[in-house]
Length: 247
Image (cartoon, rainbow, N blue to C red; front, side, top):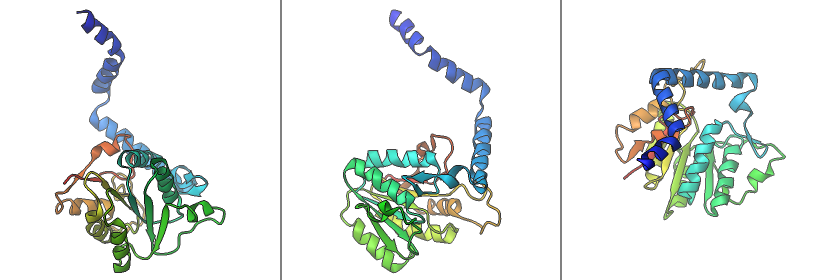
């Protein structure tokens, strides 16, 4: 009895929070709150706020900070030998990923873009980082695929992040080409699946995009599962976009 009373006393505050959440915060209410904040946060970029002003060590990167936190945890846990990133842009995300690899003491980032990334002149920390390898070309071209396959050969752990062109056909093709490079237990992350009402609405959208590409791809590849736990911080720019290779 004493042990039971001690346990209840120790965990009383936890029980109170759980009870409050069950009674007052329904699943529908939670989703509405998260979706509304997501829309506000995303739209604020038009006013030079939120993710449009995110930097890593002075270099711009257009990511949700909550996703970056998940990336850092994944890298710490997986300790990948190779991270493949499609869509370099300013190079900020490549720098972030490479810095995280520094903490594991291993691995490189192969970052792919159709043109030289728009790196500020004072950001030589990106171009000189020993763990970053720049690949110039389309992420789905034969030349680039040949090069990334060579880099991935015999690597124990490979992580892939897709953030290039966001139309469905391109993302689906990327999934078909890059998913086989992912090692068991690691991930292929499809970014910006929040487009097309998931929950963000993009004016003048080009149509179906990353979310729809994931939905179609998952019908044909049973070796991957969607890891909802990666969305535990509620808001993510990559809903249903964290695909874990389970077999």
